[in-house]
Image (tube, rainbow, N blue to C red; front, side, top):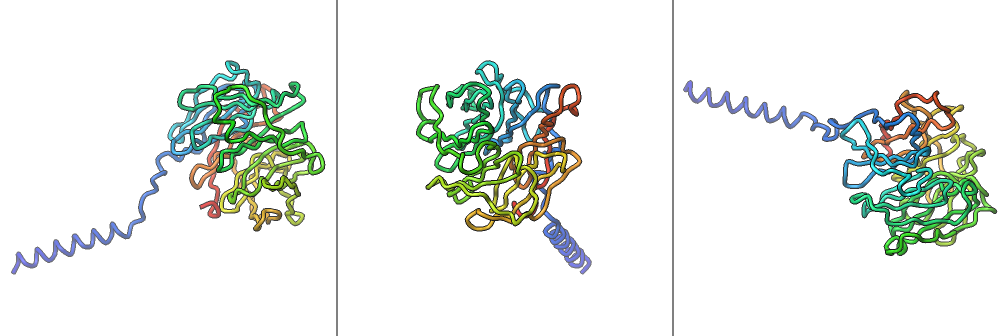
Length: 326
């Protein structure tokens, strides 16, 4: 009888432990590496663009002063120099993206060149040049559609440029950059951040650096219209990202606040509602962003801050994108 009672006791104890274990929330698999601040080396780096490499722990940041490319891991606090810009003639490394074949695209600013690298070998695959004199052009940002076409903004020229997917697969290194759309009749010059919408039908372009506007370009027809936000002040958009029809826009007019504007886009992406702003005490004049799961990696560019005034070290910081992005 005593043995039977002991067996019953141990059975109930085991069941209670199992029930407790089942009730406990599962641990966050990302909790171990959610570093809040990543360090970019150098006292004169001024990092601007960022690109997250799919199916890897890596992200890349470029310097607008040296053209160098730095690689970071979401598991490690410090970035390291990965590609020396001067070796390849990169004057400025501005907007960046990584495609599904682990090729890094870098908008080269006033040099008028988009550089393409194989991230496994660091080999320069292509230089796509618009052929314009230096400092009359400023290739600022770019994005890639699912077919592999690349769209590029120019802050000094009233032009959206394009690289066709077929050209990226060619063996020739030096190729012309296609003038895809003349934006003179739309927003003129001032193209900045750019993102392809998830339905692959449109481009959203941060345009007119003084007015703080976003414009929609229809990829099939090249028709361009201004997006209506119902009079809401969204700041001056710089880097753009979109997920589940939620647009994230980094404000570059820092005197009105350091924030990322969150906008719910309407069907057709010709209008949207500004819903909230993401702020952080870790922001130091941010420029661009990349998704890392449910979070945003934010580059602290510190644009317009002369030496020796920048807050050092230069950083990339992590903030939550919010429930809308999950």
